[in-house]
Length: 335
Image (cartoon, rainbow, N blue to C red; front, top):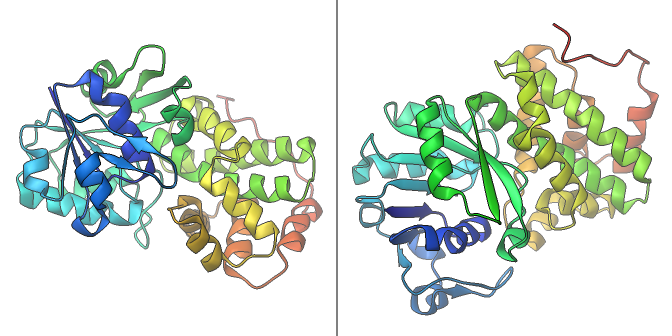
C-alpha cells in the first residue's frame, strides 16, 4: 500500500508521521520553494513545532513521482491552492481509481464552491473522500486521541479510507455519506472560532462563549441545509465536534486570529505573525456572500467579516449582536 501526502505544512507533516506505520510506502510532496534543506536531508522541521518523519518517507517536489501507484492521496493544501494542485494532478496522470482525500476546510473564492465541487470540476471521474473533524495538529502529533469522519458519495470508498487511515488508540474514524454537510461544518466553524477567540481575549466569560458557539452553529446549519446538507451531520464530528475543539483551544489558528483582533491588531499583521493559513479569514467573506445570495441571516459571520475587513471598532461590532431584534430560537430537527 502506498500513501502520498500533498502539502507538507503543519497538518500535512503530522498526518504523514501519524500514518507512516500503516503503509508500506509513503511519499510527501510540496512545491520546490517550500521544501527546506532540513526536511529533504533529515526528514524534519523545527517550526512552528518540531516534527521528525520516519526515514522511509520519500520527500519530493515531483508530482508525477509522488502520485504514481498511490492507493490513497491526501490533499493537505490551502483551499486557495486546491484547484491548481488538482490541475497538476491531472497533468501528472492521476488515475480515476486512486482515492483522493481532501482535508482542507474552506470555500473557494470567488466561486463560493466547496472543495469537492472544485475537485469534481477538474477531475470529474476521480474517486474522492473528505476527512474532517476535531483534529488540532499539535495534539495529534503528541499522540493525544481524537476521532474524525470520512465522507464520500460512494460509501465503499469511505470505508476503504476508514480502514487504512484509522490508527487504533489515536485516530478513530467514522464514515458518512453527507459530503456537503461534512464540508460545510468543517469550513464554516472556522469563522465562529474567530469570534470565540475574540470573546476569550476580552474575558467576556463562559456564558458568552456558550452563546456564540450555539448561535454560530445555528448559522452553519442555516447555510448548510439551504445548500443540500443533512442537518443531523452538523451535530457530528465534522460539525459540533470540530466547532467545540476549534473554538475552545489556543492551539487553533482561527481562535488565535480572534484574540489578536481583540487586541486591535490589523489582519495583515496577524497573518504575517501567524505564519500559516487561518481559513476562517477568507471563509468569513465567502459565508457573507453566500448568505446574502440565499437571503439567510448570519449575523455572527457578518460581524467577523466586518471585524476583519473594516476599520470599525471590533468590540462595538460584537456588542451590536446583543442589540439585534428579538426572535425565536429555531428547531432544526422538526420534521
